[in-house]
Length: 373
Image 1: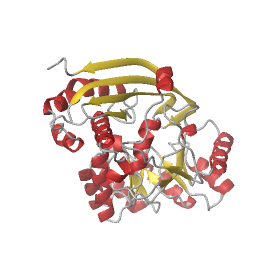
Image 2: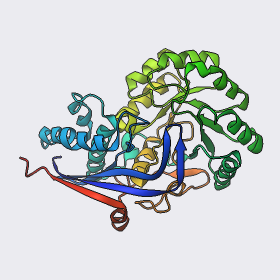
Image 3: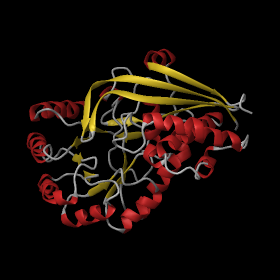
Image 4: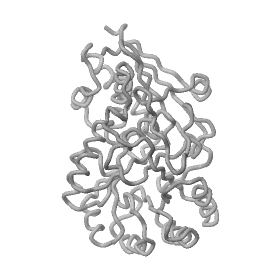
């Protein structure tokens, strides 16, 4: 199919509450949606980059520049035989910028699958239609506030609780949750690279709490350090930011730097590379789960399709819409007995609600590629 035009809808959506991690606090979801208009159908995708380059070197304004000035023009030049499977090789000459590439690939894939009336779940080879849902709990101002929040999520039916941690907010927070909710609560922690190998004693102290895993304790480029840490703690080590490709996953597994991998499609450049990582992990007996970036329904829908693949055996960060938003931009995703349903419509299976999209749009950019030729 040939790309004719594109729209970027810049959004700012209030979160239901501040979400604090080791690298900052968010009160709004700032993002942009790409609406890609082709000769066959339209496709939608959501940019996962944050406004500031803290979680990743990529950031929202940079992703927009790379997408509009480098990625989309190359895809337009490909011509009318362009397919979503061509995106990776077509854009390979551009170094990095995985989150921007994810937007381009996902929007084209959505359009292609809509044109053929095929769901993303079926296209990727997903098997499940309901995905076990975990929930991520940010760093709080106090232990009582943390316990109240966890209690809310447990009552709602989430099957796994993830606590964000950082030095000074780790052992006591985990101990308090474990003591109140008992060993039956599936509990894991996420450090977002806030520790160093010299903090091994603090990380080893978490072994006492029977955690499912410790996610990304060390910097993303310290795979050797993770391998050393994995030898010195009993709790399984999960890599997140360190994994940007199937090659990275294979290297980390070979070095025994992880026991689990969190796959975020935006971080690795799209759903095809995410599936390759899934397959590498499955071949080596490494379980995976699908992480989240506080996505709206557009991003959440596609992540649910990925999480339906067979080696996603741990609950993902695929929470209900109301975990983050009073009003999602699509029909809301609901928690159903601890699971969230995978959309079965063509493509990603959802589209923004026009009036809600207009409500949260702060700026729209339109690109007409017919005029440029």
